[in-house]
Image (cartoon, rainbow, N blue to C red; front, side):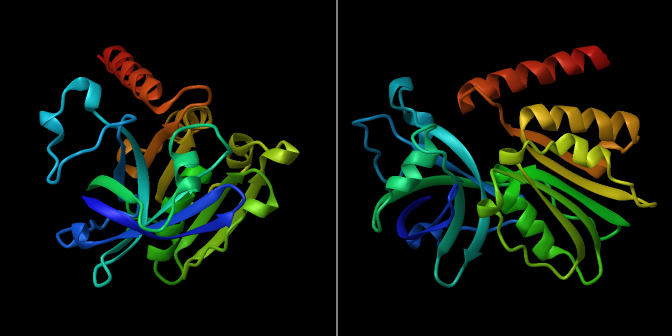
Length: 258
């Protein structure tokens, strides 16, 4: 999908909203997942792509780098798609790119994908993440019906990075701050689990995701099909390196289970 930037907004000191649109979204069909995502394509310096673009036809040196972002919203009438980017200064690829965008700049995307939406059959919901998971957590809360029981833990830098979360659910939201040394894993471990069937969503930095996967699946016995748990990124690794490490860890885990 080929789109252009229509507007940007600095939501918090570390979160940039980009609204892109155009006729490239005329055939875009959003899915029903609250973690629905698209991949943003970043061309190598000096490379421009034809329209239409077939990635399979590109030589290796012209292939784009890709980053995955949750669809925060889509307006089919306006052909507008909303993405939120975490920005930590000059570090990384997509954050600095989003900070430099101007109205009219081109954006290339593929998608959508996704795999989670809060189950209507669950007795309660556990949502855990950092800034990278905040758009999906916000989507999930907005999708929950009146009175749904939700326990939410979000790790951000400080109080300036907190966002209003709109929901009809009976949601207990706890914001944790890196600046004061809050421990996301410890906070979830301290939670007195309600009775009944839980549907869990745990996404963000790979370190805490790994620890909480073990805690929820092994110590609490939550079935894998009742938990969406995945590391969106790993501290100290770019996305390409993290994908390779993630694939290797998954293969090792499968061998161990065998």
